[in-house]
Image 1 (cartoon, rainbow, N blue to C red):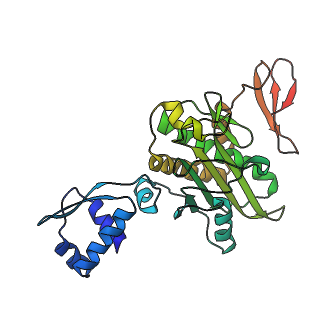
Image 2: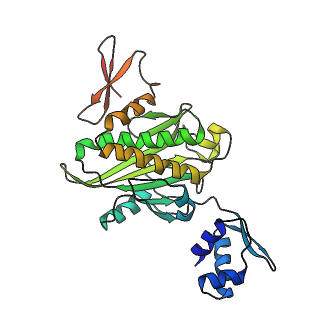
Image 3: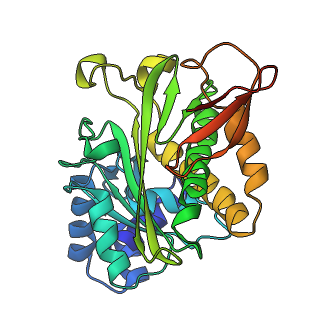
Length: 302
């Protein structure tokens, strides 16, 4: 009931009386009042005036599905969002959904996770309600050897989303990180399950430091708040990530990885590389990226 009332209140800035709402939805006015209180408990600011009714005047900084749906414009992935207040790991929760044969496009997004993982099973530290911690179930028809390309696609999608929302220069670093102003801003972790020839599914986990203050961040990390000097809208950012992922993932599934990689290489961080004119040379057997210096022919692993 509260979802239907919220949807109506969002449609206009007008007041809606308790009687109007009870008649529209076929419930008692007491039930309407109870739904309004439930919405207020979730953080929605609802103005109530005698003889006028209820009017929505503020929404919470919480990544509810109802807050994201209108911002999503996906055409390839049919997103279904599961919002959690906290969880041990969004990747683990998404894996449970995948094991239940849920289709790709299922998204798990949490306000906080207690056991988020980074590269080499390191712990991903993030302040509650200050970041974006989400995982997406994907079911590409690929084998294990194509995973590095899928990782690049996810990195590229998040990179483009961050640049769109913040207007800041974001850089990719193989295999799992995004940087801004020389500090890590985002971590990506793909976990795949299935056979070598054909994966059953892949969980794409994404963690972004959004509105964390300096004392809430691990050493060497930054947040969009610190980079832009202004608080960011997490709902707009989460939606931008999912919208860009929809586009990039579609290109990948259509065999258009080359165009995706051009964008990735354009955003690649060369700060830790020797000086020179470096070009992409391929992916090694240990899944490291290789680059070749155009003048000398020297090849290095990134």
